[in-house]
Length: 138
Image (cartoon, rainbow, N blue to C red; front, side):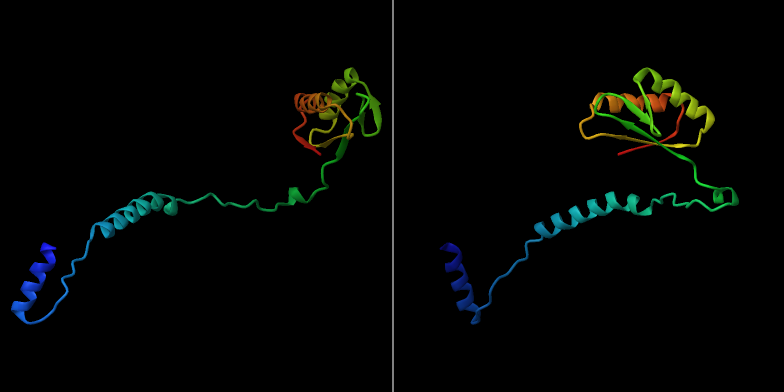
């Protein structure tokens, strides 16, 4: 009330009615500081570069594709390497022979729907230990 009485008394003396308006710049400064921090954090990420070298095609890449060999884990615990039925003990030497004979072969490991996961994981581990580099699974 004291403010409005002062306002009326001041306005009556001057003969005009003016609204007194002051801008609160605190929120503006807060927003500007937040934007400054965001730009300071984002600027190094924008100036960095990624190594985007794409592989170039050479004449050696035009050769025939590497052979694909399928290893299927059966629901009975057996393994089939390109149609040949193998036991767990026979699989390791067969994979080592495959790695020695054809080191660039792609081994496609798959399993039956009812196959045990442990047998599938063991087959993947043995394929990696045998020296085969290109292993794919379903």
